[in-house]
Length: 79
Image (cartoon, rainbow, N blue to C red; front, side, top):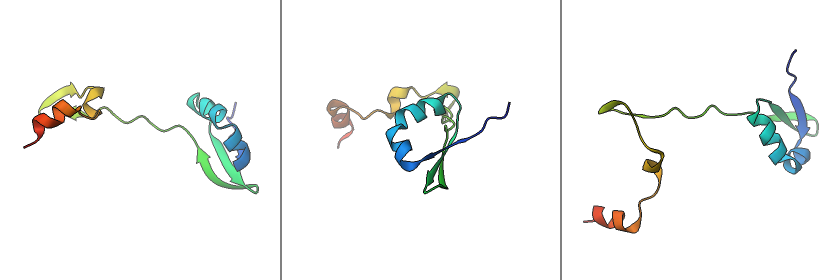
């Protein structure tokens, strides 16, 4: 069975964005059209690959690495 890409107009996409995103997460693609003319594609993105530490091959950065430092930690780095 061929997966047909559904075309939705801008207003419909705005109204149904949550539903469309849920369907995109399940693997569907959509073409967003203005006045019946395709202008964009709504599709899932590939997740970013996990980064490896150069000095520790195979080690991964914890997700918390990218969170902002609290005031105490920031003060410890201040001169």
